[in-house]
Image 1 (cartoon, protein in one colour):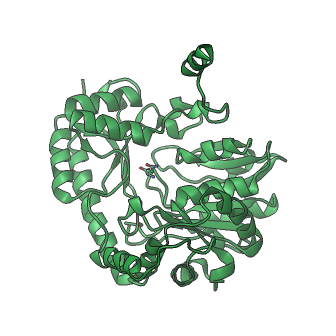
Image 2 (image 1 turned 120 degrees about the vertical axis):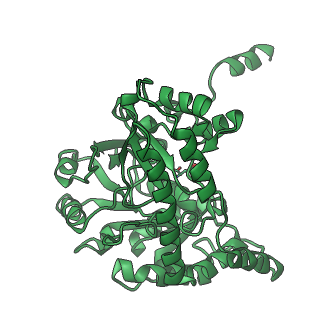
Image 3 (image 1 turned 45 degrees about the horizontal axis):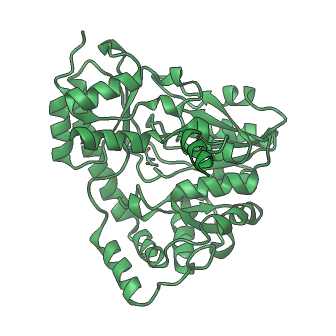
Length: 397
Ligand code: GLN
């Protein structure tokens, strides 16, 4: 018995599939920020809450007795609110009961999509840098994530390079727009070219659109791959409440997909979480009813936050890639001579007192992200101003 215990203590209990992924960089940087009392511009969570009325709606839903399991696909009022909210962008009417599945944040929607669709040996193609749950959830299915690198300074989505990555094992393409961490927003031409690849190779498209309401450039807008010709029957659109309503801790997300793809997502969702907290779903339905006036204010406020951080970064030797959307900004730190992104971020948190995200874990080959650093600007203006002051001390060697 003693022998068994010591064996368990010395060898990793983590499965072969997940061992390569270690602990997510978001937890690691938030912990480092806490240890060093640094301003946390790393993990992307706002330091302010969403509208008070949404929290009141959640409390009221609890008091009104909405406290037992929700239906597996979601509370009908929320499914209806999601269908209404998405109809214009998707260019079609959505069947709330049959095409909307409410999940524990978009992260569960991603996992349920992968688990519901993929067989061992399948391949999924994504642009990199990517959200770090993509390769991990694909690996959990015994499938493989292949990547196409977005290259600075434009980080353009190149469908021709995407097509080169297609093999006879490719099952799906995973597109994130507005794109974390580059801040790129896919254009109509880019989406049309990606749709063309999906149609010709008969691929499923999975779109991670959690920053859909955070397109910050006036002349641009968020466009949906699902709305391109011939895509409706092959596209899964994933979104969430967290970023749009500054409620990342509520973990409410959803998948919108035609019935046959919804069946695949639900085949996994029913065994992953079954359902998402009922009172929060009622409150989420209220949140989505706030509509365009709320979204307009959100964008205006985020533009201000972005501009404060960009102003601060412009006083440093960092090369800044201005974002069109999301609440992140990518920079190139190579001229500062602090080594790779991990070394630079460690130095930044310890010496300058600002935490950022080293993006190398968002690449299949970590060297592709070694010169880059990501800052989040989902923070109140005084915090962004204080961070800018600290960053003003950055000097090239
Ligand atoms: N998507 C968020 C980010 O990019 C973090 C999500 C998480 O912490 N898992 O910062």
